[in-house]
Every structure is written in C-alpha cells, then in structure tokens.
Length: 81
Image 1 (cartoon, helix red, strand yellow):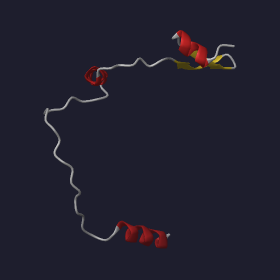
Image 2: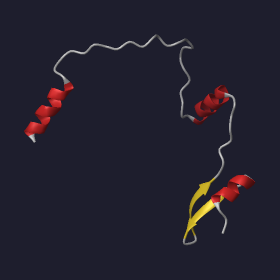
Image 3: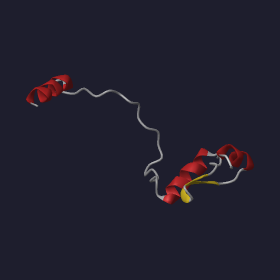
C-alpha cells in the first residue's frame, strides 16, 4: 500500500481510490516566493481582476449607523415565529 506521506517525499501525485474507482488526486503545491507572480497567475486564470488604480487604500474608519439595534430586530423576529 502506498501512503500519501510516501508520495510527498517522492514528490509524486497520489491517486486516491475507493473500491478501485478514482476519488481524488493529491499533489504537492509548489511554493512561490514571489507574491506578485502568484497574483498575476490568478489574474490570468480569471480568479482575480486587476486593480483599475494602483494606489494605497484609505485608512479604515468605522461608519455610524442609524435605526434600531440589530438585537431588537432579531428579538422581534423570534417573537413573531
């Protein structure tokens, strides 16, 4: 029997099967030191959209809200059930 640990050490893909039927492939994820290259790769695949403007984000500040507290709304909804 071939274990996943042995596949990791040999840097191979390991096919997991259940009763002889393929279930999953386990393989190593290569480490990338360059974060920019990883972002570019995700953009090329379509998982990320490039930023329209390359600038720093503004400092975060909390926004005030108006209205009744959320806890009151939740309690009201629970009473109505």
